[in-house]
Amino acid sequence: MAGHSKWANIQHRKGKQDAARSKLFSKLAKEITVAAKMGDPDPDKNARLRLAVKEAKANSMPKDVIDRAIKKSQGGDADTYEEIRYEGYGPGGIALIVEAMTDNRNRTASNVRSYFTKNGGNLGETGSVAFMFDRVGEIFYKPEAGDADTVLEAALEAGAEDVETEADGHWIYCADTALAEVTAALEAALGESETAKLVWRPKSRTDVAGIDEAQKLMRLIETLEEDDDVQSVTGNFDLSDEVAAAL
Image (cartoon, rainbow, N blue to C red):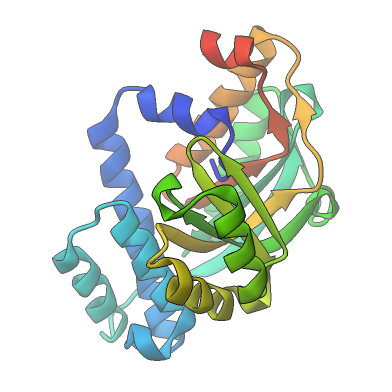
């Protein structure tokens, strides 16, 4: 689940860490391979690959696994993946964007539609919910990077558009086309960031009404994320402290 709501903390406390880590590594490796295949295999010459490697390192992906993923992109037997975006509504009318990378469009579309249907959601047409989000660059720093004023000043000077500071750290947002440039400027001022990636940022958030509805929504999101073809799931929901604690 993309974003930095209470869901991130809830997800971190859940079990199955080993299985989840293996699946995460597989998805990160796929993005690295695709990025390297589409551009230069040298991260210094390929902005998308550089960001993919950064995300992998942020999730403690071993260097040899990263290197193998890059090397795989240069082989003649490298899989060809298609990037697809699905949009729909989860329980309670929560808007969801699902990004997938697949070598079989029919399989992935069928699976995603099934997940929505079986978990109280509805898969919509392309564009049916994207207007509720902005496509932006997101750069994350831990609290140690500095206080809110320091980070805000550095972010604005680097060309960022917005900063959200919470107890867990600083989330800095910029235009999607400026992510590499803003990241470089920020790292010159604040040191290396934890992550830097493109995300779908909700223009507004909808409160999930009650624990039962929240559980249904989480079940749909988890089911989507468990699919090997799904790279990310983003929703425009918010959880109250009470609901988050219950989950």
